[in-house]
Length: 180
Image 1 (tube, rainbow, N blue to C red):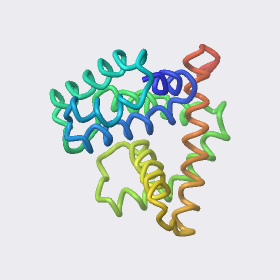
Image 2: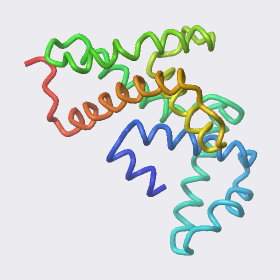
Image 3: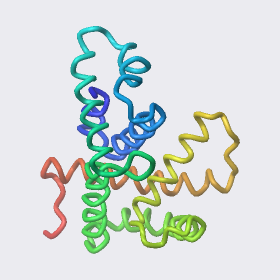
Image 4: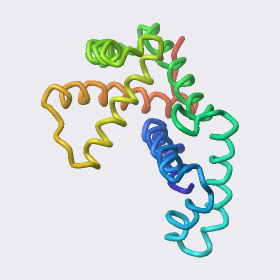
């Protein structure tokens, strides 16, 4: 919970990937609050446990209510993608951010290829990017080999998403001037 709050305040991209991990962690425990309490929350200091019980419990309830117990993402996480997509469009249409556009167009061929490969042509481009980043994270956690081609794609996508996250932070702080 604290990690999520810190990441949301510091880096929206890292926050989203973290929240996707939490969704998968909840699924791995069968969306069962007792199992989550026993296997996850019990590892934390006693004083942090009540807040964690409430946080995980709320997430479990939301996953049940939103029908994402087996796959998909919570609306709170989809909203992050929606907000980032809106900012992405604004940045692309502004002549003031050529480096952002360049980073996007460098990542675009990889995004297109991933969308074709996954058959997910209808999902937002940014979701494809986050799925790629999350997928590589999972491969690394499993100590599986990552091909040079995948690493090249992830580097371009990561640079692009990192730049978007930085602009998101500036926009949130009122420091981003899109139309002046």
